[in-house]
Length: 444
Image (cartoon, rainbow, N blue to C red):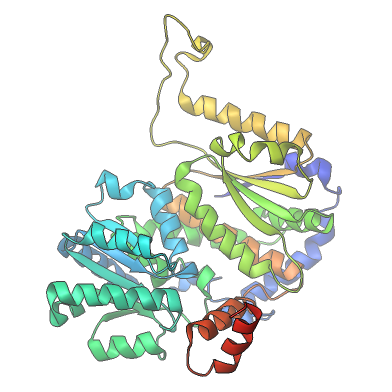
């Protein structure tokens, strides 16, 4: 079970920060449970850990086993919610260096999440002499970044294996009924998995969108879903003892008191992409109508030597949420040095995890003294079950706080603005007037 500790934020919060919001939280809970609030058509994730498609889940496991048997590498093509959740889980459960450890027998490369020529060329070079497959993930199939990447890698795959064999190595995760990628997958005979209509991209990590790449990385997706299910059941219980209610109430109270930035803090390098996933989850859900906490993330203790000064003494705009894992996968004892050149013999014999824990505790207190409210989320470990519980906890808190802010936490209307400008400047048919207008503004 995920634990929540707001004790180091209490001096910044009114005594009734939670009790005064219980009615509003109950209203938010009912909206999530029944899909009756703003954006309710996209609350399919709420009961997903219990109600997911068991037949498709089995096909995901079978496809992952097949990919692991016939491929040395998998290229996962997607952007935003179509890749962040998968990468977050793969790195957190395994390692940011999972392609180098070779423990899982399959290298995974993420493409189509940007437009960098150099990044694309690097992935192409890394897979050139390997047997490889593609998992392309897009509800529409027309989003520019993944669509361009899929064109490139599909062409490479067909050049390497021929069209018929390449067809067997392409797995499409897309809309069940419509869209460009759906049409192509049907025509070519790719194995298909579904991006559910009732679940938006940033909430889709526990669907085929995330589960196929995660399973290919050797992560136990059954355990991942079990952790999410246990979290779902625990967080469905209303009341002040609900950790999601406590976190949502504290975030909302600090926001209404003037805090504008929430920094997610991790002490594990493997947590970095979980922070990236979390930023999309909260940024797209809350950032609208001139509202919302700006989500940022840092990796401590490394970033204490770069961002630490600002957090300690800069503008008092922020709050911090620390994610702590109760146990490490092993232990390292600090050795004794006869010369004690660095003066650290007082740590000799102590476990490195003890040093890290005290660094975390000392940092929290320093930042609180510097005027930064600190909250702590504790997960049992970095295993699949614990990570599944943590994912669901974050999603549920996000839904609750969206409704506390009286916005639709499940749409993202602002995302279209940059896309329309990009389409016009690229010369997409139908955007001619827009292209002329933008080029005039840009000076030709």
